[in-house]
Image 1 (tube, rainbow, N blue to C red):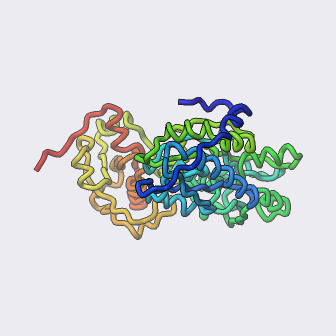
Image 2: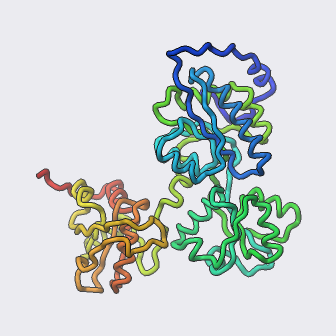
Image 3: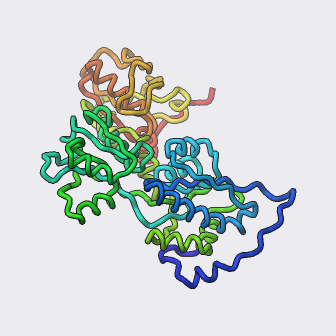
Length: 403
């Protein structure tokens, strides 16, 4: 496998200019691979230039390994692209981290990306009293449009803090271009804005009196992912891109190096917005060893999964009280849409209750825990890691006998 830690030099550019004559189409020629390119947050002009560069790179890279070539389309709608990743509509995605991360989540393999990590930061004026996300509550927020990776990251971080943008901020001002958010601060229309860290750093370098009060973890820059089972592999596509002169030119244009991405690189962005919050007011978040201690002391483990899941594996002594979930997987979920039999938790409001389901991505125990708190139970524990953490920790578990 070729290494991607250097920018391809001029020698490779010259070597890549000699191209084989295109093969004549025949009845047996495979259909072209479907490729979607979303250039991410850019001005209209630079967005199209970036799309054109990626299209040239992918077209040349796919001539040999794909045989049938590529059918390449431009997208400026990341929301629609996220749906496409779930449906497996395209063979290859080129896009920002939240699109490629979703693709990886739904069965695509990461290939390669630009070594320009992206971070979202919340920015306010230096003179403002706002110092973190918590005391930005009730303030006016400025955001790029919802398709932006910045907005995606901020929404996920706010959700992880057990709130939502709608609940946490008094109003939201949206604009397509991140640099338009600086005037929003300057004219006091916005109290805090969300931009890429690179944009914030540019403002600081220009002498703007701004400060960052929150930032996300870094996520990969524009990257490529290919569907598992495609007629060309991730390795073959990566190697072909390394040999493609347009890709070397793209790296120079973006002043970036190429990096061979792994699924681990997208773990944070692929789960942000899907995972439950990290805390729940009124409940104590516990891990597997603490759960074991609580059970030994007489606490009740309330499994909120389905009966089928419960029978396949359960914590010894657990009781099954399924949470029938129809509401959104969101901190602002509407409990009226769901069904949960609180009466089955028993009459003792001082009983120690541990709520769990299928790990941080499962919202059922989060919602059931809130239901118990609202019903007046005072000793409530939320096992966010749930049964997967219990099993992976080496704890004993039961399996229902076959009927």
